Image 1 (cartoon, rainbow, N blue to C red):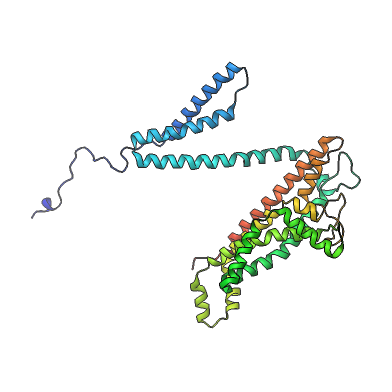
Image 2: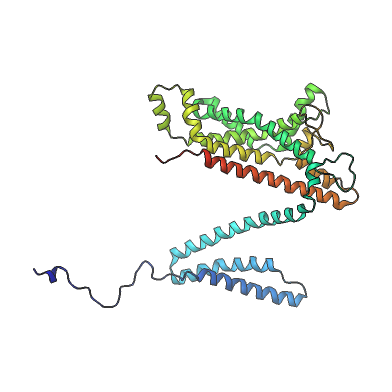
Length: 365
């Protein structure tokens, strides 16, 4: 057998088409179809606007265009690519549309709060309280301090309780008691926030008399809302720790409590910290429990155990509900306080992501 027969020369005919890419829409086809659908929708809305003598509705035109795009992309894909690929494009269009629909109120809220909140986002707002202020001026320093104090006290109360409860459920809990605790935690997750405020108010009214409103009562109300969130998030993170790590520690003779402290908790600390930060961000904007348990005041109060204490959510409510003269000053303070609260929540989420990245277990050698 010659070398030529073993390695025949390649033929120089027509190249074979790749069957994996045959029958596919061009990459730009979805964008072209979307643009065409929006153009058709805009044309219809333009005709309606001219006929009615009203302004052009850009929002309606975009929404209707997006709705027209969904059956259009499915039809073109069905004709060119087949039923399987058409179903995939249909589901992709529906999921993308749902995401954009969910982003509309979020973006609109952010733009609105930033636009109106910047009017009083100045040095006086962060350095003055509302004591002896009846019109323009004043600030929300007392509300910011009250929010930080009550939220910090609630975190000090709820984090140890929630974390130790989750450790019990994962590492020790068995039988009816563990199932009962899990059931109660699930029930606490769904209780209305105003119920927590009524409980805290009633608890302190028993010992210090009716009408008692203090910062620590507000902190207890917030702690009741934080505990179930901390328990559930920490429990899920602890369950993600591989059992092999525990068994390796037990094989070396390490006691169970030391295994939890030295192995389980360090492995899951990133997820636990993220859950704790998210629970704080969840309760920092509560209004109803603080309005009932902590009340509101126009003066500075650094003592959680003496007198009423203002918070940012209650400050926003009181400024909007009790507008004086001029009303614009009260509304500006309310929007600025709302913007401050959103920035605090954003900072907490960024801190949670940073902590999760720093304390995440290193997988490399």
